[in-house]
Image 1 (cartoon, rainbow, N blue to C red):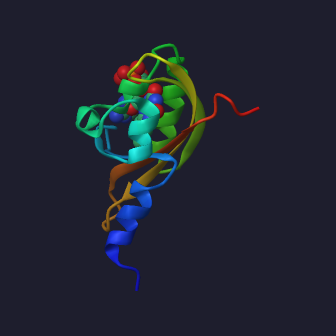
Image 2: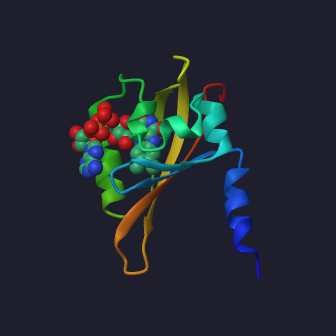
Length: 120
Ligand code: FAD
């Protein structure tokens, strides 16, 4: 059997920026790549909403569609413009996956994104 710690280390060391949130997008965990890409130290973003990454120019309709999808327990993939702590905008290819508890309740979301600004 795989040691449980391996699951943590695999996420922690992933080159994708990974975060785990509660059902309202409050950040509960962020991995190292999330810190590197966003410029935020983990302790700064824990307890904040993921909207801290928004560049404030993405049309609200995109967020509405995102929320409608994930609240229906479906994964959502899309591209958003995010802003780093330092104020640089980047194109984020983001997948959000719902995480259900054992009783089937929607409790958490897994967010995974990477910078696709330079991808053609
Ligand atoms: P919000 O106050 O969030 O509202 C925008 C619209 O979204 C609302 O009109 C409403 O229709 C809908 N909405 C918001 N919250 C809820 C809710 N709890 N239930 C139902 N509908 C809701 N945003 C980014 O910009 N960049 C990211 O990298 C990013 N990553 C995310 C990762 C995860 C795992 C999750 C769950 C969300 C992520 N979001 C991200 C979305 C983020 O939480 C915000 O909804 C978004 O940034 C818009 O923020 P806002 O303050 O402008 O508007």
